[in-house]
Length: 491
Image (cartoon, rainbow, N blue to C red; front, side, top):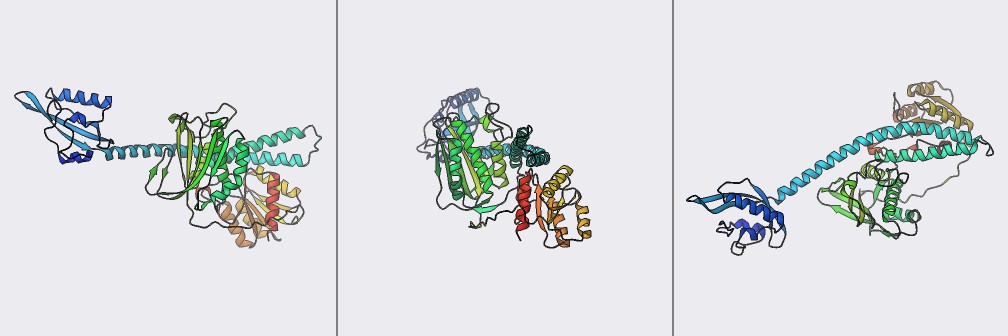
């Protein structure tokens, strides 16, 4: 083009901007997006080239015929005659796709850094929760033993009840940490998400109060999903409580489900979603919304925007861990003053929903008390606790903190042992290996597994193996009594 910007030649590549060479604007400046930054960049570059100096390549936003903005890389050189610049020759290369690819690469890199950070925090949280659960089991169990044998009129009765109450609350916090660390034991089943949410909707309604409008929009013909029903409740409880706190009085919350097919890899604000079929669960509110800086931290344990004493900062960390554990993804749209939408993607299950009829049997307090139980637990305090609780119930209880000693005991014990209660994570053998060896020696023995957290020994991503009896630490005295009686009765 000439020094005044008038074109002297246009290549057929002008079609990238929706024009034919015969209908394109006359001047270079008429093609660029008219922002102050663009105008200033063009003016500076033109002035420099007119001095006869070749300039480095630069990026410029052009305006498409249909008003869409497109980024080009411009390389220009001066054409001189008798020492005077008479024309500027330039090449414009459409780099829209390269820019999008670079942005996607940067976003994926940020996702990787975030995932590594969350994984590191998760390992720490899981380890802490595991150790705490063992100690909490001892405190909770002995508190229950004291309460069972203490007169309500005793001056210590209320104190021990308060100790028990604080221990139960601490146990709830460790459960949330385990959920974040993806080490929360879960029992998977194929469920209809709509029916599951239907059943908990009244509970959610009571939870958020009458001042907030709660709407439930179930999607039609929803695909089945395979996961733990309790985790669905954890997700919705945490998201609805947060939405309630963000909206205040006269707020609105919408829970919605729908089938969603993802055709291409999708990078969300929080995670990466692979192509496939998903059930999308969303919770939308019209609350205060969040800034980008807050969004980048909200899934980290103990991060909270609430006042001291109003939140632990574990709610969204719990949600994040559950979604990752179930091979799903979570997305978030939020703007200050305009509310927030959490979108959760859960993989479609290929299996169909099973309609199970659950037969509830009354657990007797006296039956099977002649049964012999072998308890194997490497944590001595828990071993002694379980022995005390079950012995008081009338069972014949054998205990050892060594899996290898347990095998020897079985080999040399003259009578039948009816039940094995074993921890899963132990130094010599894990609980599953031990139960297999003992079952080989004494076929028909029943087994209850105990654990404060899960790892690959339980199953991938903390999924409990099918058809096993399991009790999660920390447990109450009544928990272990109830589970023991139930398993022994189940002939």
